[in-house]
Length: 284
Image 1 (cartoon, one colour):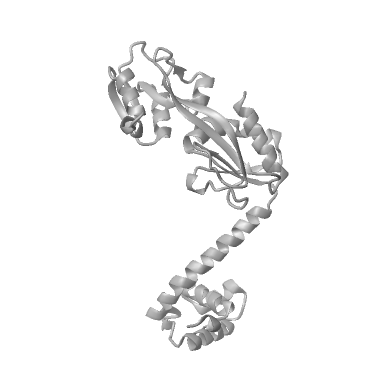
Image 2 (image 1 turned 30 degrees about the vertical axis):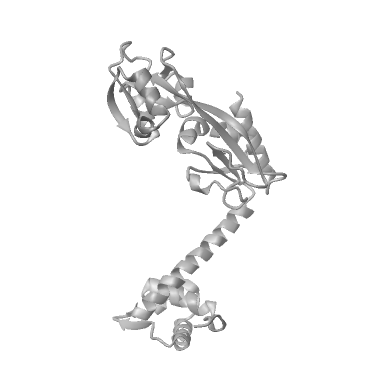
């Protein structure tokens, strides 16, 4: 079928609804049209594609092989259109600010400051995502990104936000002579962090190894042993006294986190205000 003979969008919507619901009548109810209108749309679509798309099954309908093939494409296309409309709706909502941030930083540093952020900006409804693959600043999906490396993206303002380091922590009521340590699997296998752990913590028996830093924090809070944590992940627990830093063990710098937004005036004044607040929080 050439582009000049693409079916009417109305036909495709009626087809997708009937295929999804298995019924012309239910499709008609969903689309707020008559059943005969749905039947007419599908008949015209079948005439245009030259293939039967449905066959009767009891009081409903089911797809033919051709119908299933067409639904695969039509369903995906309609999902993309719905997603685009949803994104536009989000973009036009002047209370929503989308912030992407690594999960450990959200857990330990950002989440404890959300209440303060909402108090300062009562109109704000933040969308907080840990999907770091969606960090591209485009004013549609992401307003602000906190990243472990500069984005180096044209038209984006980015500045240093926080420095992180690997620290040894325990629960305050833990024994003065720790029985062992807990750490991340990726830290043990890291070319940089692995040798640091072996040099300074090699005398401690490994009690548990985790693949998620948030689980590691939970284990530390349960008092399972000396735990090697990102200071930003442990930030709230250290401030509240739930954990204490073991200063007898050295720390290892983990680099700088950067905060980014579009250069110049963002789509909403609220984006600039939230950006400024987060920068201020990093200094106090």
